[in-house]
Image (cartoon, rainbow, N blue to C red):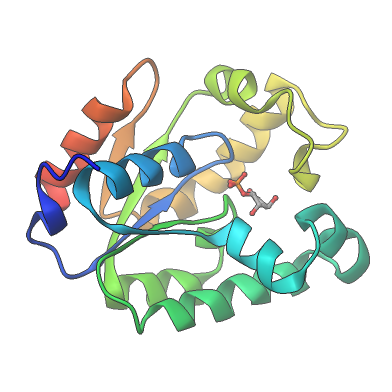
Length: 177
Ligand code: S3P
C-alpha cells in the first residue's frame, strides 16, 4: 500500500455520491490504497448482506426496499471512523440519507458527462435502472432530474471527465482532508 498520507488528517468519513458510472468505486479504491482509508462499497455490502444481486432485490422487493437497506447501512456506518463510502447512485436522493452523511463526514459529488457515463457502464448488467435504457439520452434525462439533489447534498463537486484517479483524489484531499 502506498501510504503517502495516511488518514490525511481526517477522522470523518468521505462519502462519494454521484450518478452511476461517475467513478465512485474507482476513487474509493484509490483513497483506500493510497491514503489508508477503510473502504465501504454500499452496493457490494448490501448484496453480501442480502445474499442476492441488486437486480434481484429490485425485482422481488421493489426499489423502496433497496432504498431502505441503503438508509440502514448508512446509519450503521456512523459507528466507524475514517471510512471512504462509495454510495449507490441513488443514495443521495433521500433527504434522510443526506442528513445522516452530513452528521459524519464530507459529501463529495463526482460528476461526469452522460457520454462518459455511457462509455463506463454500457457493458454492465448489474444496474436495474439502466436495463433496457442503456443509451446516452436516457442517462442524460435521469442525470438532469437528479442533479439538483446531488448538488444540494454536496460539500464539494469534482469533475471526473478525462482525469486520472490520482488527480481527482488529490483534489478531494486538498479540499476535505
Ligand atoms: C442506482 C445505482 C447503483 C445501485 C442501484 C441503483 C441508482 O449504484 O445502487 O442499481 O439509483 O442510481 P452505482 O451508482 O454504484 O452503479
